Image 1 (tube, rainbow, N blue to C red):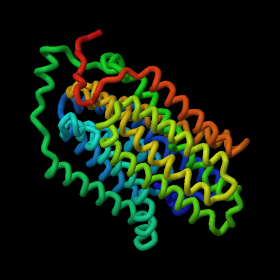
Image 2 (cartoon, rainbow, N blue to C red):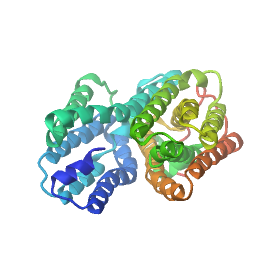
Image 3 (cartoon, one colour):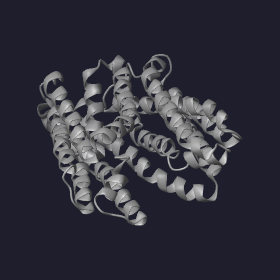
Image 4 (cartoon, rainbow, N blue to C red):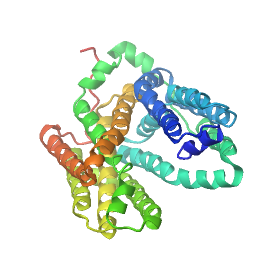
Length: 380
């Protein structure tokens, strides 16, 4: 996807403004539709099984990516990206599958492992995609991508064992889990706000970081490599945070982990505010990345601990909607704010993370993850 603007040029679009328009539309339509439909697909997964819903999503991606190699017009790409967004939703379902597969005291580890993969995939993908596009061409790169999705389909079909669904019987006895029930569960709305805020802050760096590196006096020829290194450090540090969050949750309640890591992340963002040279960013970036990773996994784990197992698909779908809303809004706000002052973006990030830390420390009800029980699922 990072090379989509080059693909539009191959399709005959020569005007830079038109290329930017089509790129923005095509890159935006998929997460927008995914945000709207993730709770719906999660609800179906709660009824019919997570595995079949993930298979449905991945098979559709094989078809869509394969078709991308044969498009002739820009609107063909837009239509396929819209179809991709319509059938997406495997991301939130894999988190539900991880939570279902793990004992309760290992849930944070399971969710953290999946989130580590979700963070490392986009970090490594552009490198592989660039190499494939260089060797085989952009059109063939889409076919290679379809093959990657096919491998994912086979992994799920043959290697994931799903327990027989008994949710329908339990629903009939205890009342079904509705979206209204889910939002009423302890801390759930607060944790949705936390997920939105963390994603908003995490994605605010993308539109302005290369410009900030230039502003700090980095030679123009070295801006891409310095920016790339910082993005990679942030992604790697976030993966480390996801991975080690489980150990923290065994010692500290989720409220303390989320509030503390958000405050540490604010300190990392504040290093950017104070930076007078690019080398200081090497200090702030790993601090920020680890903190965001820890806070994100802790928020998802805390939310999962209050969900009944029969409603995890819908619950993680709602969390994904909050996450994608932050992803969509963040570049817009940071771009507008960065036009006035790039440092103001990092000030907003620091203030936002401190606000999240205060909200969680004041409003979140503490319940040890190992002793938490699922709330009742009757209609409220």
